[in-house]
Image (cartoon, rainbow, N blue to C red; front, side, top):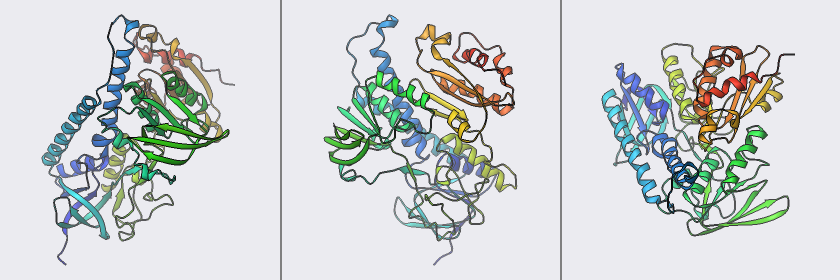
Length: 463
């Protein structure tokens, strides 16, 4: 067998962190190769973050058009043309593909399209998409293979050929009645979007409430918002059987405290979690250890058990957000140069892109209680934020947790522009500012962020 082609850096998977690392190191003169099975820029610009937010925005436009009358705009009947929605989304994806191809060319990193698997330590064999194989090795190797949608073992589910988030973004026709399995971020985002496009939607969550990792008041607020838009929400409903075919007619039988119930719809979307893409890629051959859930086992510098091999992104067990993968690439690049960056005490923000969005950073009330951390809590309804008097965006609330040192320990917001307001809180937390500094800041009137002043003014005094 011939010797493998050798690279300074070999990256399996072109997700956000991997491609940024490739471009950066290639510009510095390193010989870099990236092996990607399907999506030129990884899943985020192709089938996940950007496309989903693109269609969610189209859904928001449809919602605004239907509710324009109170603002003085008179419209006729409103309907959604899903082919146009999909076309707008695909146009954005095509532009992203062109951008990524240009970035690879400009940086000097080689993009190899094919399915890669380890055949020896630091050595990958690639079955090229265009035919043939290549055998590659690297002085340093990065595994960046991501995750895929979990498909629970429910009788009849696989045979029903349900949608995942990928298929839900490819629909040219509007589902008459979409059943969504899973009350987490993806399930709720897609449920609201398709309700706003005009579908009837039923959301099925086996747990006692939506978004089990969030505080009950947060989950309750989101439930009220989506139910007010006409989404049927079933919690404590365990799917036990599926019959039919998604896209035609499908029935999900759920077990509840009151007995079994049949939920009938036209289409079925499964959004119950993620599974790492670590099976079938020769991980054992590479000497890389997995944890008991199948994720790559890494230390706080994202080093695997194999010398000279790092992991980035979701397959490494990192929080499943593109912005975390971006930070992963910074940690790995630093580690390759002998630096000391790590994932320890990383302050990770979360945003669910519903309307209004949910944003959180730091501790929730539940986490503080479980960890025995004393906090003071203040809340502010969005209706008391002055900008909402002008925009009528009064749904939701802000909540802040203050630690014994007067620093912000956590922040949650359900409300207009929550993700943008979150950045101000994150900055204050990173700077270690006492909450009084932000409370007394001169914030522009009339903005949503202006509500931080009244919120922080409600913090109870220290005991």
